[in-house]
Image (tube, rainbow, N blue to C red; front, top):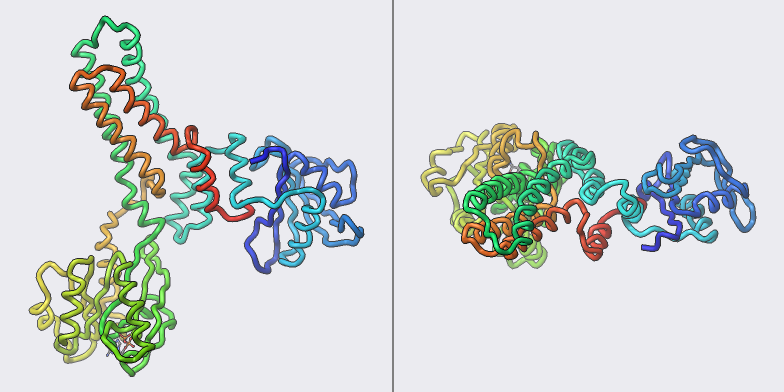
Amino acid sequence: MQASDTIVAVSTPPGRGGIGIIRLSGPQALELAGKLLRRPNFEPEPNRVSLRVLRDPGTGEELERALVTYFQAPRSFTGEDVIEFSCHGSPVLLLQIVDALLRLGARAAEPGEFTLRALANGKLNLSQAEAIRDLIEARTTAAARQAARQMGGELSARLQPFKETLLEIIVPLESSLEFVEDDLPNVEIERLSARLSDLIRMVDELAATFRAGRLLKDGLKATLVGRPNVGKSSIFNALLKQDRAIVTDLPGTTRDALSEVINLEGIPVLLTDTAGVRESADAIERIGIERTRRAISDADLLLVVVDGSEPLTAEDQELISEVAESPHLIVANKCDLGSFSLQRLLQVVTDGVEVIAVSARTGQGLEDLRKAVLRSCSAPENSIEGLLLTNARHYDLLRRASDSLKASRKLLEESASEELVLVGLYDALRYLGQITGETTPEDVLTQIFSTFCIGK
Ligand SMILES: Nc1nc2c(ncn2[C@@H]2O[C@H](COP(=O)(O)OP(=O)(O)O)[C@@H](O)[C@H]2O)c(=O)[nH]1
Ligand SMILES: [Mg+2]
């Protein structure tokens, strides 16, 4: 990153809208804005909005009347001088204005570059920056709430005592290292080892929240499978409460896998409808079946749909044994029909597999199905109340910290030299620091920020 250049990007999403915002950040922001407004010594009052005419730098032609706000360094998002232009939300117009600023000497911002500058200028730490991205990408209100908490610095606050405790363990070991002739007395070894155990427990507790946190952020992939005509598409539609999939009386007519996200108590569930799993000579249907097999191997949970109004066919049974090793539950559909029998089904299905009776037609049992889906991913109830780890990078670093601490504890208890014990403790300190970005290598930073949107 060159701190000396001034970057520009459209910060609102692509497409037409009421307002489109352009952000300009860097030491030349005022000067470039002044040129665009044809006001050589442009220095408006900070944090005040004013209506200004933007002109083409070449021809002087009026491009737009925009609301212009100046955020003076260091009191801005990036910590640099920032100018925001709130324009009409026309992609063509926004492009023209960005182009004018580029001609005047600004540079097009890379994805996440504004946030990267905020990080470099100490306006936020790495886990807060990541939380901004997570907030933008949140698919449920529960996920948005978690991201907002981390943006507010809650994760860094949780980690701070870990680091302090670690330093309190490191210091006596370091000083004992200074005075080589005295070994650490046994009581001191026991005390340090007990403190290490406390620390390990706290780190592991936080790491364990990742299971629920990951679900909240990434959601669960649940896939409907079953032979043609059992009612997969009808269940898909009933759960979505909208008609997306084609429902027909002809077996085998839903050929594409269709996916939609539904929200089950804050957990985003990517629900996928598939074509029937069936050996077929029909080339088009074969493509659908291929996709189905892929969808099956991709899913976190399979919803095996059978027609409960008929005895299970050989095809049903084959599918049920095929999915035996994958997490699944059986959905017995058409319980509105007189010939429906759950008893008949339970005799055939192996013990321990959950069977839910539903009717896509009347909606009966769908609530049980939703609950069963949530149970299957063992989303602990009310688990989304506390702070959850939602980021795989943070989880990985906590795990590594925990492993290093455990290795050090073992060495300490074996009365190994302080030098050896300290190696793992310093590793753990470094891993914890990488979560908030104090010790994160440059290439990791680049990789993280490449996942941001442009203009953020
Ligand atoms: N009676 C009854 N019929 C249903 C139910 N669900 C689906 N069907 C009918 O079963 C047929 C096949 O449904 P569809 O959803 O296309 O099955 P798919 O091939 O598994 O996707 C259609 O005629 C549906 O109207 C149900 O709960 N009760
Ligand atoms: Mg279908």
